[in-house]
Length: 222
Image (cartoon, rainbow, N blue to C red; front, top):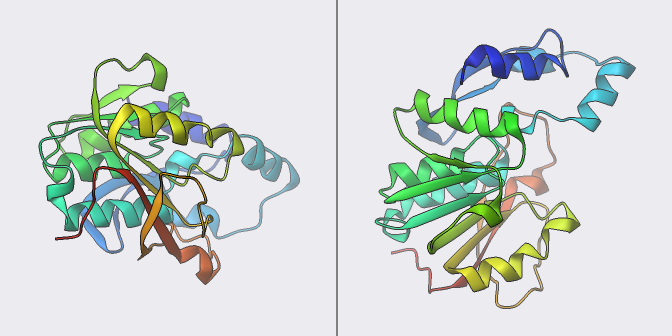
């Protein structure tokens, strides 16, 4: 579990890139190992573009929906305090870390991608926290109070998980910047949250509006 190992994974895609500790805009409570913005301020050649498309280092970014959901959790800590939480498709682990900081009893950062698992572990260490790391959602045993997921609906293969989440946990929170109307009972949109990806990818303003959907136990904001 070393930063050098995670940088080595990044260099398989961008040979001159590196991860730097970064404070997040609007989420100053947490710090993450993220892609150095200077590595994005140039044109990529054809081979780099191919590698980025085939093996994007998504764990080296804090995506807008993750940042928005993490902010919401820290502003509403009673929603996670004392709970056993699973963060599905955890990526950098930002939402899992927000849950832990807000007082969750235990948090599982779950991601199929091994570099993402390493990123979650390193980011937990950076923030002096402990997360459980899981590679397989179905291998996680025991009851779950809350399942959270940010920016996972872009992949149609993830849609069937929505039904499984609602049956397995008392409550589910889904944050997504690309799905404006999730017509999938029992999920209901609660509100629109501001979010932005960091390092900045110059995304359109419409993708800085994050829809928060909930299923299960009532989720208020007080």
